Length: 400
Ligand SMILES: Cc1cc2nc3c(=O)[nH]c(=O)nc-3n(C[C@H](O)[C@H](O)[C@H](O)COP(=O)(O)OP(=O)(O)OC[C@H]3O[C@@H](n4cnc5c(N)ncnc54)[C@H](O)[C@@H]3O)c2cc1C
Image (tube, rainbow, N blue to C red; front, side, top):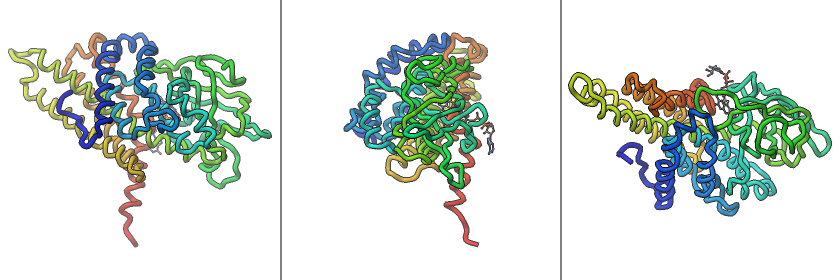
């Protein structure tokens, strides 16, 4: 596995889980990833394998049938999976976020109803905040939920749902009028159970998942819109049972999601480094292997330093959350650093490949199209810097 990106202080269970996942990635994901990605094909066999390994229930408490593992274990697993194929980590990520939100904020009935089947991978989660007109500015959402007796009637359009078609449970953020003076307290998360697939949903009248959005990378996993026309959802499917808390619940979900995106950046960067250092020892120019040219060695040194730094920061952010402390500063830093470094390491590995990096026969071509998604998902670099900057001013405020 190499010297880079080691994690000190893991338990035996964590080491066993990681060894199993690493083996699964090497045998079941890497050999098929590029071919499936080029065909934009859903990795059904890989998903089945992940279900067997219990990965969909990795962080769900044991009392609900999961493995009860920490955010750190989850992030390290994601790093390994993304090293194989980033899209596969996307399939578990939205599921993990929704399970986290239900476990942290759901009613007892919601936990008992959803979590055991989520742990088994029978229910698969997606989450939906973004709309065609907004992503960063969540306060501007316009999808509305209006109370009607024991139901809410939902209308609006959502955008960019990862696993929008394949999921069977979507946590949807809507505007509800709670009479609060700030938009943040007028938002509610609804748990909508649906049938997997595209088009008008057969089990939820008024709910439509139009086809997949065509993307430059991050293929295989489906990303969709979601249209809601007079969708009636029982009031007991409000996450936590009480309206007006949706924004904060979603932000909590996105915060753990940020550590996850950082982990993905670490995994993709590590794979790019492995490809670069391997290729550099095979290709010769001017009478020697290109790895012997100092310029290429410098590139490899910079790449390895970035792989290591991003990994350690991601681990630190995960451990902070696991300790129960607030980790928005560290999660923002980790997501920002890991995604920027990932883009740079991938670019350097691409350059090391020369013209062959541009060929679809080489894995680096896929990584080159995948890395940019990490700059955007779970909040752009600018949004991370806003979060980090605000927190720094809280921490280092001078008295006037
Ligand atoms: C493949 C993919 C999958 C996704 N999956 C999901 C999902 O599962 N669920 C979901 O809800 N969303 C999802 N998203 C949406 C994603 O979260 C948003 O795309 C992201 O938050 C950015 O929002 P936006 O695209 O509307 O960009 P905008 O918010 O319009 O931003 C455009 C540019 O302006 C910058 N900007 C915005 N505001 C400021 C500011 N105040 N100061 C400085 N710069 C600013 C941004 O950084 C960016 O560079 C996904 C997106 C992609 C591409």
